[in-house]
Length: 169
Image 1 (cartoon, rainbow, N blue to C red):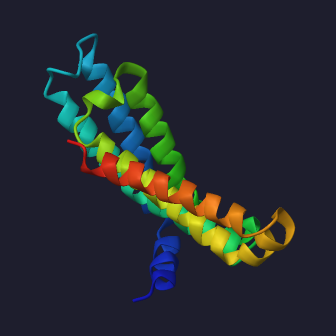
Image 2: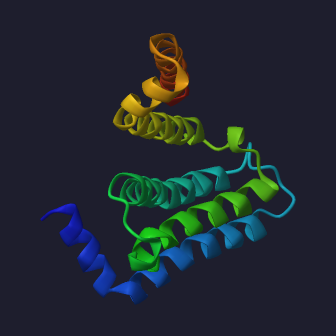
Image 3: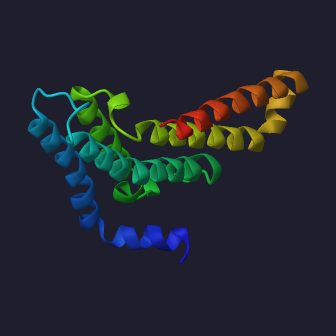
């Protein structure tokens, strides 16, 4: 089964995706309401938040990478993409993170540093791959090898920071 087969399969069951990715922010909202005014630092509800963050971020990150790949590398038209497959996980992730962040600090949620490091690493890796695909244009228009070395240094530093965040806690 290829990734395109998986996308086609998910596209046939859009109502299931709507239920699943609609339930995640609702569960986060319910968790925030149950938490009340208590801090999540000492409460067991922080593990529920960890579960919800991972449950929303893994498909959301995959969706963001897939959407960026389709738009920037394959140059597919946005109007041809399935909203529920390409954008719903990303929207669900953003809404879930906003709801959780209203009451809690992300540093109090176990494992958030690792998922944040993964997000940074994927973003930097994608940007590096995109820059490498356009390297001839960059060297031709922006002045040469020194600028390319500077870009490589910035990418390396960002990847080191992301790797350090993934190892934290």
